[in-house]
Structure formats: C-alpha cells, structure tokens
Length: 398
Ligand SMILES: [Zn+2]
Image (cartoon, rainbow, N blue to C red; front, side, top):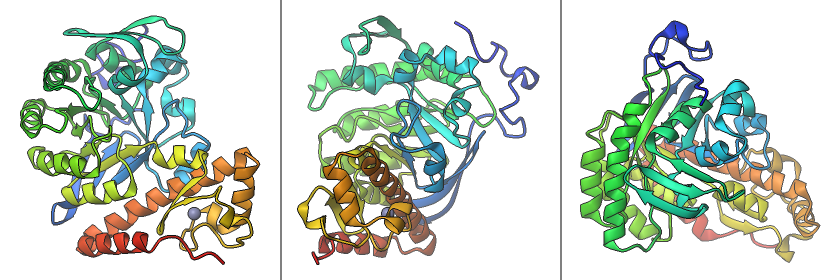
C-alpha cells in the first residue's frame, strides 16, 4: 500500500505542506462558555476552526448529496463527514491520496471527519465475520473480499488526509442480545487501543474513540471508563439512533456524557432529528451528524421552525409563500412553495437540490441558535421556544 505519509511522519519536514506546522499535534478544543450541562466551544484542526455545538452534513461518498461544496460552506457548515468504508471501496483511498487528499478531491477546504467503516460494515456489507483481529466482509458493490482491521481503517483515513479519524468499532443491530452487545463492546475497546497506536501524531489532525454498550448503562459505563483511558483527541457515543427511540437515546446520553473528559470534544454519532439535537446539546454534546437533512431533501421533506413539511402535499400547489418565512436560505429567498410543490410532482432534480439546501441551512441555523443561547445563558428558554414553535405546526393554509 502506498502511504501518503512516510512511516516517520513525526518529522515535520517529511510532511506534505498542506498540514500547517504551526498547529500542535492533535486537534484543539476550548470550552468557551457553559449553560447548565450545555457548552459552547471551538475545535481547531489543520483546516480551521469549528464552532460547537456543530452539525456535520453527511458527505458519505465525498459529496454532500445534491450540494456543491461552495453551497455547503455558504450554509455555515465548518466540517463535513465522509465515510472511510465507501471511499476505500470506491474510488480507493490510495487513489484519493495520489490526487492530493480528500479535501482537494472534493473541493472542501474546511475540516473533514471520517467514520471508520464499522457502522457500514454492519449495515451494508454481506458475509461479515467479526473476529479479534477485525472484520472480514464482502463489498456491497462487487462482492470482493476485504479485511478491515483497526490499523487498516486508520491507514485509510490517514491516506484520505482527514482532520478527524474515527477508531474502528463494532456496531450491533438493535435490538441485540446482551451477549452480542458485550462482545461488540469488548472488541470496540481492544480495537480502540490499536487504532490510537496506529494513527500518527500529526499537527491539526486527531482521532476519536467510540463508546458502545447499547442501551445498557452498566456496559456504557464500563466502555466509557476503558476508552477514555486511551489518549484520544475526542470521544463519540456510537450505537444510538438505531431504533431505540428518543427517550432511550437521551437517557444513554445523559448517563454517558458526564463520564467523558470535559477537556475533549464529545460527538453523538448519527443523530439526529432537530429535537434529538436540542436535547443532547443540553446534555453537553458538541458534535452531531445525520443523513436526515440531505435524505429528507431528496424525498420532498423540509425541516422548518414549525416542524416538518411535505412539499408533495396538494395544499402547497397554489401557495406563493416561501417554505419558511423566517429562513435566510436561498431557497426561501427565491422560490415559492407552489414552485417547490411543482418540482416535487414533476420529480425534477432541482426540487431535491433546493430542499437539501434549505434543510442543511436550517440545521446550521439551529446550531447557531443553540450556540447563541448557551453564551447568553438562555438555553432553557431556547428549548422551550423551539418546542412551542414546532407544536404550533406549519403555516395555516391560505
Ligand atoms: Zn430556507
């Protein structure tokens, strides 16, 4: 395998010059202010700063679906998520490395976090065999056989040149037997140590460990204690938003967040709906990612301050009003509900583009509102106003 970085990558002179040497090894995190357990902070990476709490639009295949990188940046997003599993299979991490790294490949100059592939191996790959050393699976694309070990996953993410890599974990389906959850947790802990050891210390780049344990609080505690003993740059809660529901998810977040070091960023993986994010921010979570704003945009669903709106609904056919009169996005500035409805009915590509743009913008505005509320010490009021506005529902029909 061609390595983008030489084995002695601790030597600054040997490093490609797109890693600024003025940034200290690992990523930085500063908690700027708090309100209850909620906190407003700043992550610094080789590609700039990320104001937290932050939402990362999902760019699984090195693209936030239906959006240009310029449009994603214009929503205020400072970090996107890409996926090591997908990119190692196609087009290949070695190819991306030769083309200058993932940032250059996808024309995104801000921060990138990659998922390790553990979740995708669970959800997409056929014939997966999990063993102490790693996972052997067949590609969902062509049936080819691959082995993903903690070291291989780190090498892939290092080749991609991402700012934040995730340690390989084992995800189990929900619901799962206690035996399966316990085994997955044991592998996740063992793999975490190997992942940290395999990822070099590089300026502005870091690796996060993942806490598993399902909805079992004892296992979550055990896993959190073991994984936080490893010197990661941040910690993630994995294995949630897999069907356990809002209450169970928030119960795990409330239980586990205080077990994570306050000096490091905390990331809730795969979450979520706006109400999940608001509740988890109040528990002290700093980072989120979810396919909802982009996937929903392609299926004519919009997230608004007044809740979710389905643009296929006939009630919009003659409605000249914007989707959300309080939204500052280009969709709400230039296009009426009647036009968005027409695009949905005609199954025009632009419909998905405009709704994705609005949805990603909405999520970024939500995070901006949460950050402002924490600084002002009004997070409780923000939560109450958020719930009240959504409970009122969509604009009354004309
Ligand atoms: Zn909008």
